[in-house]
Image (tube, rainbow, N blue to C red; front, top):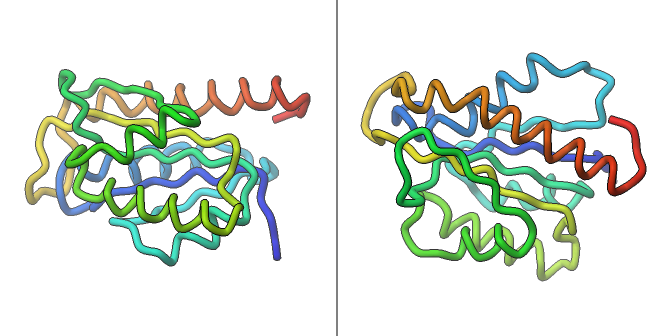
Length: 163
């Protein structure tokens, strides 16, 4: 089994306007990251159980997703550890978070759920057919990237590792 240090997983449907926030953030972050970093970037689409093995193989997990949190469009929130577990188990916060909860439960059953895990949620303005993010969510992409980097730096400091 090949293990990576950190999996950064973008969830969402790129054909549904702001639902593409997760894959957009992950693609941009990957393009800005040195290839030597111990990071694996993955566009998880709209989720399936085939994502269980990549999650099980990593020590740390960051999921980026559009999530209805009841905030203004483009708001970015970080849910870490148990807060992530609670957020993804809430009903109807995204078109696929129920499946994310199921996926996390599946990985938990194998006792390989990453201890360090976080969800970065971006409040969508519109989820409808379209091939681009709305202005509010486009403006949130740099903030979501900054949150991913901040989490990585925090985890690296706590683990005593270098990025």
